[in-house]
Amino acid sequence: MAKQRFTVILIPDTTGYQVVVPHYPECTTSGDTPEEAFSNAKEALELMLEVDDTERTPVPANVRASHVVVGDIELDLPEHMLSEVLEYASEYDPPSKAGAR
Image (cartoon, rainbow, N blue to C red; front, side, top):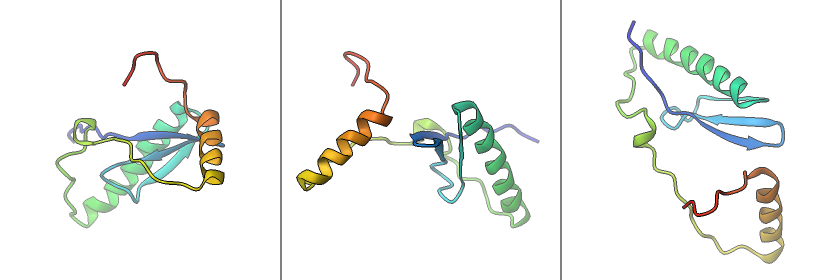
């Protein structure tokens, strides 16, 4: 067996952390803590790749963070929606570091 690292993204929500695997969007899981979410992600991805191996589906070449592009988009929202989005963001987004961008 050979080792391969995969990028996973943890997104905080009301119950803990949702996990996204960029190159396997159908592979989703969650956890109450980041540690549990990472552990569950490993298990979910192992199970998915086990199925892929029996079907001989190749693993994508670009599975690391350096191949994932993250950015912001800007939308025009009605005022009532904007206040809900800002309230959600203040509750679940970690505070930004001064000077970080």
